[in-house]
Image (tube, rainbow over all chains, first blue to last red; front, side):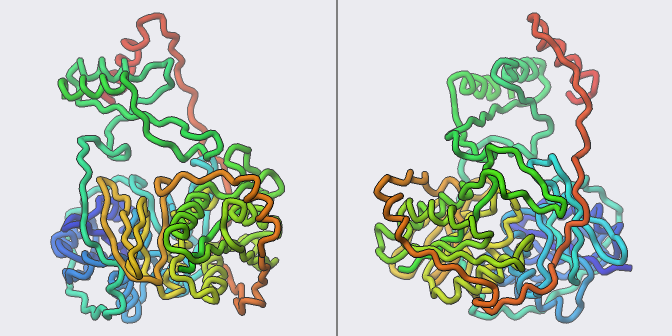
Length: 262
Length: 252
């Protein structure tokens, strides 16, 4: 069986949901060891055990929460020295991107980023990577070992298998030289909005097709709370994927409406 | 303060993209300076205006990528370095990072500014790899940067707000498009850019071996075609029809 690691990204004691999603594929590819670092790591490891992880390495050193990327890179590189895996899976989220990039360079193996799937092939691993807004999909083979692949959120559906991971403490020594990018403060900017990727249903349309009317009806039907968002081109020489948020009175009235009904 | 900004020439986002038989992106069409990098250059220029120093643009690409550097120079950057070599054709993120790191190391920069990811490759992996290879801390996804002496403070965009991060120079930062509105090059700037230095370096000059690629694109396929949808003409009942459609599909 291939040895597969899944890195469970922690933020303020909470496990990023993508790790459980990745487990759905990882457990098909081999024996999975999860690594969770920082506050809440033990509880997160136990949770991932229910999703099929056989083993877990945890460490709740506060340095993992106080400093970006480097302490986690040290911990993973240290574990790699002792028990090298065949495949390491990260989520394609900010903190994991920072860590995976450093690890790929430190181990000299590179990595495959922004993947929507990963599978075993010819004794190695290939990943599917969407390009051009998803119009093309590349099959990319990792040539080095371990293969490192970053998986986009919502690529798989998380499901519990009912198992339990054997949780071990990961011994790490984080050198002072890795405590450099310090997190001074985490600020939550007040918003009741659901993130687009977390929305259960997205209604969209052009101005003429008036998705707002549809959304209002939906809310009136008592279905759920609704939120309006708008993206508009801000400058014609920017690529289509760079938009600035805009607000209009029509959208504002919808937000008010949804507050009332939601 | 010496500021290095990494820049990349990419296919014009407003043009159609053509893949070559080897699955690299055809670059004989219209190409532009990556719009994300324009924001990095702007931030570099604004920091230089306050703290003094020099803004150096470093790029990797074919010879015509000089045009992208020249655009940044016309915005006000001081000089450019282009790494160009046959051995870099189709380079992956790791090889790109190794080549850039070799050129940037020689510059001894206080601050390295990168975009979060390129418009075309979108791996977002060159900056953290670069930070590791240069031995620098990284402050990523910055929407605001403040420098006080050797202390760099950054507001990092997060899913639900921002983090305040701090490190001391030398440091690598990645900036989002929210960091600064890029300036337009003035006529004076465009004229001045013509005489600014753009140094060209090969892998041999940098002492970098291309080596085996860390990854290989085996195939490139069109994404599964979407099934044709139903078209509803709005005769005043469209909203009801769509709600019924969604309800029948048990979506709502």
